[in-house]
Length: 564
Image 1 (tube, one colour):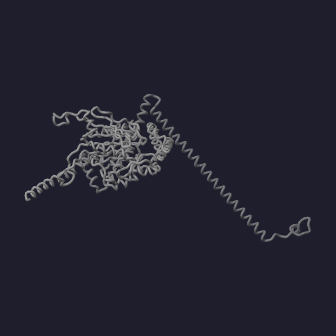
Image 2: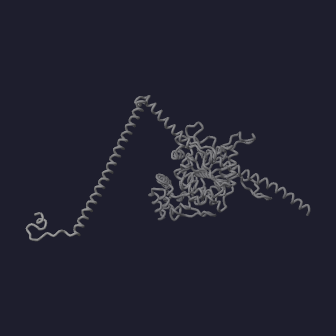
Image 3: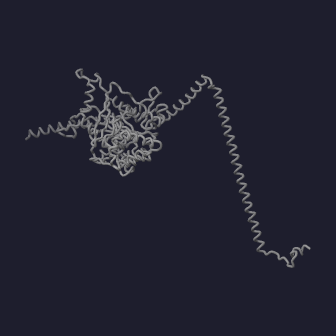
């Protein structure tokens, strides 16, 4: 019966043929493939399930850990609250005292970590820098600014941004009755006006050796500076962008110079220091013509002295032994470095200029070196200066290109956009003698390239001190990239401090608390003093040799005449 059922279909006379071998093999393959895909899907689902379980376990453990942390923090807070009991006045006093002690301990530790002498870079075999170091060590007995520790002030000097803000915002030293202060307006060749703020100490009667010598009045001292002769060293100090001589760090530098017995000359850029622009050409990071004019005018007022210039000269030309030094801050530091490099390359630097000090010099001027939010703040400061002197720019409103450039300046948001907009109308000068004035750059890139003082620092032929801080948020990176160019010149001394910010360098006072004087003021004065002592020693050696040669020449000429 089973045989007949398996061999024929019900209701038909046909017999059922058994399936072929090929059909059987294909169906078995399909069954195997379906089983394998089923295994894979089950394996994948199992892996996904395990992964989900692990994630769930991790989240549960993290939440439990978070809960444990919260509970521990809560217990700690409750214990502190129970111990301090801030709900009572005595408890609040104890709590604030504990918090203040913790902050003070942290600040003292931070101050200790930052208290280090500066890093000094210079050519090892440089005769000029080695002599300057020798003079510093001799006069300061090993406690000069290159070797002693810089101890930043608590809460201010230990943080670069706060230290820089204090240098800008603090009023600086107040005017002393024993100091002479007055302003001079100097007219440039293109009609622009520059305001020079002078400061010097009025000598007392005890400083004169004879009782017949009377102390000069303030009017006489002022006349000597304005018309000559000037018989004291003159230090010209330039400020940074969007600043003037009224800022705290400028007043501090000028006071340090005046306290030394020298004459401080605060240089205000065009349109700065309350002096409105008289031409539509403002200052820039590249134009050195104003510095050149001021230095030449001061050189003409210096006291002249008969100095032997060469060995064996019978007729000695008049020259001056009253030195002039240039000190620049930030943008002003870039300008004095560029000026010294231009004059050094052309060998036209006035003989009275004996050295320079560059504080916070970026060396490379470019918009990429100024990050947010400082790029916006610097642009806002420049636009404020433009609006304050809008009358001078309005006179050029008929010029289509000038008006378009000024509109782009006022609508720019960053200092890079502003420089790119104002570049075609900026005043500039050729970098070689006779330093002819020109107008405009192609774009911001050309302006930044011309303004960067790292292209000129290798040509500086007088001692130059360059100071910067490792926590300077504006110039540390471009200054570090240009270090090799600085060290190409044997006249350049590079000093980098561990703290100080941008033009800050607020040191701790001797009593340990509060804000003391700026370390940069001491470094500037000591460096200038060492350079003057070096020049005096060189001059005395040269004078001694020249005197011997003069006597020998006189005797030789007399013997020759007697024989004839």
